[in-house]
Length: 88
Image (cartoon, rainbow, N blue to C red; front, side, top):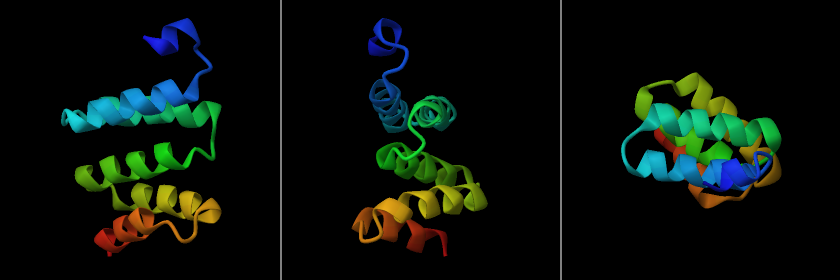
């Protein structure tokens, strides 16, 4: 995988997380998003998708924390705002 070739490729971890989430494996997805965010803490797609996985797991406080971080740099992002609305 791309992460083996370049272990600092945060985008590869985000992509692998999105794939895992699409396959219903939120635990693996969150693990991949954690890796991406360790390399790039402001990666809005990783924050968004990890928050969505947290919502599916009922981990709403963690989801809201990620949404809050993501909206700091993308305050008018409609999918982020919609995800936040689903939590409330």
